Amino acid sequence: ALMQGPKDTTQAIAHLKALAHRTPHPLRAYDQLMQIYSNLEQRDSVLAVLARIETLPGLNIEGKLRAAENYQIFEAPHKAEGLYQNILQENPKEVRAWIALGNSVLSHKDTLQSIRIFRNGLSQFQNQLTLQCRSSIQFIQTIFLYRHDIWFLQHIVRIVLLTCTRQG
Image 1 (cartoon, helix red, strand yellow):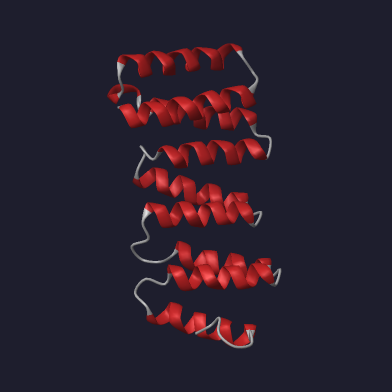
Image 2 (cartoon, rainbow, N blue to C red):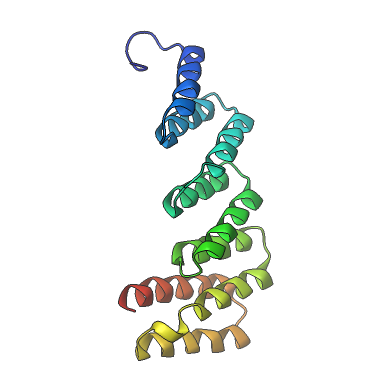
């Protein structure tokens, strides 16, 4: 109903806000609200919607990852990093959160913290992986000691984490 007839942004926003408060699963309404606010270049409104999403009871990991990605898109990396850390407290084996957190920290030039995050992410999987994957992780951890090209390491860590956690 929102897309039929002339587009009235104010009315659409009001309708979506009401829908978000009424429905037990408001993510779709919130996504549409963010899209409208984004098109209107109202960053603060987008961030307010993301803050509401973040506090939804029972929000699953997929929803939290999506909210964190949107925080990154709308240039609120510290909010995204807090959400990634929240995800990792709930589920330390969530590979995507380790990779995204490490990448986010690296994006604002905190190389040492990024290395610590990637190391911690790798260590979460050390005991449950195949011998080949454990060897790969030990190799990467050794490289961390001698090589300071974090961009190179970032890609290797991503490949090993994604490949090994699928196998393990």
